[in-house]
Length: 322
Image 1 (cartoon, helix red, strand yellow):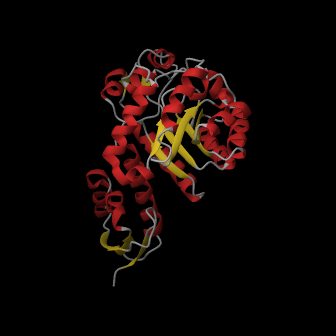
Image 2 (cartoon, rainbow, N blue to C red; image 1 turned 120 degrees about the horizontal axis):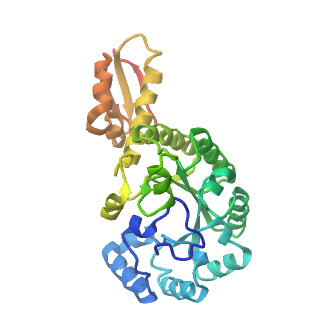
Image 3 (cartoon, one colour; image 1 turned 90 degrees about the vertical axis):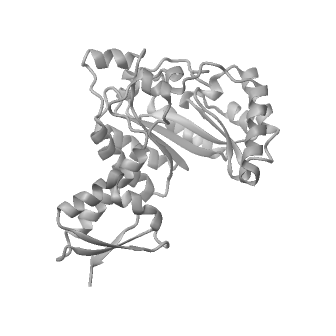
């Protein structure tokens, strides 16, 4: 639902370019999509959610919103729930009662930053207290709370982005999404970028920061739904994507394994090392194109990899090979 319901044009936003979509869905579109999804997924549909994304769902025309929710509610017994995304300042008790009536189970807030100066510079139209207030209400009414943040916004820096993550943690969301900022054509951010008053994080800086944020959220058992924008041809064609990577989360997870290994390995007297991980973490340990592995070998490390599926996906044990 590109840009629908948004009362502001944020500095970074060109939803139609990001999604490659301008058409607004109808109730019939919802029904057709869900019938197909039910057919495609079969029994797996019970583990899938219906989701409305791309605009500020609770800020769209109320009658239109109800027609979409009515269509989705017909499939309430087929799927696990209904998820929406919206703005923090488009949440109040009345709308939460209405969403509950139509079977909505999860609400994600596009908070983007918890620094009021950054929010103001990027023309968000809300402040950090709006995020706190909306988050408390969403939890009070029994919805699953999701929070979305953007790193590297105009006026932000590493410390402000880490502050946002820590403020999110204090709100105890069930889920988070982390989106590194990509400069899109046709936005205010493009103007700042071309004028050189705004310098985006490099891909390396994004990986460095977001790997730290992943660890912060994982340590608090907060589920990370997404790290990085979904790939689309429109995104590539309409964005300055030198700092974008389609497998961004994989890069961040590989960085976590790289840092963890070096931190543990420096305490050992030998470079012949047994390393124990979950088998599904092997690609993360190796890194993209085996960059981590080649780096370890260049440092003189010789690894004997052991699999233990009782470990979680980021856990690693190492010791000296006998």
